[in-house]
Structure formats: C-alpha cells, structure tokens
Length: 269
Ligand code: 8X3
Image (tube, rainbow, N blue to C red; front, side):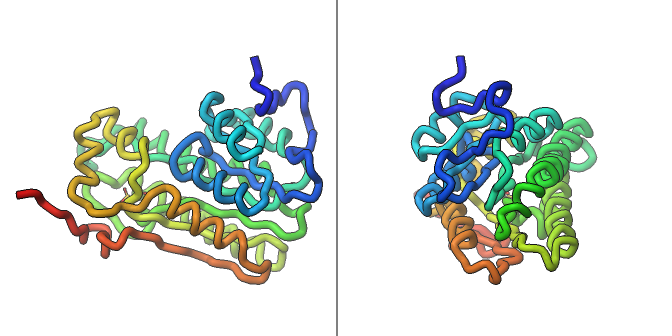
C-alpha cells in the first residue's frame, strides 16, 4: 500500500510535487537517512517543499511526513526509476541536491573488487548524471535553479584503501565542474559541497560491509566529527544565497580533521 505521503507515480504522472504553488520545490536524493535526510529537514525549514527520493520507502516516507514533503521511491542507478522521479516532481524544480552515493569496500588497489568499483561509479557518478539530466528541464523552467553535488574531500586527495571511492568522487567533482561550464549563462547555479569526516549511521558501516567495529574505528577518539546536520546547514546556506552568488565548491571538515590524514584523536588512559 502506498502511504499517504508517498507519490505513487503510476497514478500521479506529471502532477506538481508541491501542492502549494508558492512553495519552491527541492529534490534531495538519498534522503532516507544521514546527510540527505538532514538536508530535507533544513530545506523544508527554509520553506521548500521537499521531494525526498531514495530507495527505501519506509525511510523516505518518515522523512517526508516529518517535513511535509513528498516521498518518491527512486534508485538513481535505474534509468526507469529516475524517469519516474522526474515525472513525479512535475514541471518546475528549483533545487536539486544530488546526495545519493556511498563507498563500498576498504581494500588496497591490488585487492579491490572491480564490481564494487563499478557500483560506486554507478551510484556516485552515473546516478548524478541520470538525475541531473532528468530534472534539468524542470530546473530550467524555474528560472532560478540550484544543483548541489554532495561530493567529498575524497574528491580532492587520495588515501590508502579508498581508491575506488576517491576515483568516483573525483569524477563527481569533474562532472559538476563541467556542468557549471556548460550551463554558464543559464539561470542555474552549480555547487559542490565536499564534506570530510561526517559521522552518520550508515556511511562507514556500508563501506566496511556491515562490520560495526571497523565502522566505529573510523571515528574512534575524534572529539567531534561533523554531523549530517552540519553538512545540511552548508547546503541550506548555499540555497539561501541570492541568485547571482554561486558557491562553486565548499569543503567542510570537523575542526579535528585539518587534512585527510591529519586527524586529532583523543586516546584514553
Ligand atoms: C567521506 C569522507 O574521508 O571518508 O566522503 O573520504 S572520507
């Protein structure tokens, strides 16, 4: 059964996502948890009607209900699913936050699984491409749009056991930079927010294949990693700026992480 706050795309084709024409529409992918869910809350707090897109209906339904938005089930690696998202969003979208992504695996290059690399490229890069392509007509139609890529400090520097994710996030940055060049002169701002160490419930757990101890070790002793809300606030701020202000790139790290390998950790005893 479709929950009341979820869009059943088979019955609501081409319907406006926002029931209130005065509210701007923001679409957030990967909105079921972490940075995506926090971004949905932040943008809703600024008055946007937020389309919460992700694979897990239960998660996005809960977030959408909380923010008074719309839940749309979407897998950014599936072209048909992305087409359904675009249809559900309607003809006008003001903000797109390409947040869906993730790291899979923690291996040296010599041991890495090519299939995991393919999956990372598909979700972090091709997914970004698919959703942007699908929503670009609606973004243009707004006359004043913003596309935010949730990138990573991994898109700036390499680190051991991260090559597949590092490569994907470098690629996402390249796509974002290219899009800014190609849309120059159009009413679409293009930004990348690149977080460093963010402690979310799922990111490191997924990367470590469900190994809770290994996931927790990533943040061990770090006094205050970023929270999803910190990154969401950066995105909300960018969206709140006047139309002529394009924040090309914004790197956000916790105070305890001066660089990718320079992390202050407090050891007990
Ligand atoms: C997440 C940051 O340091 O795990 O995008 O690559 S890091």
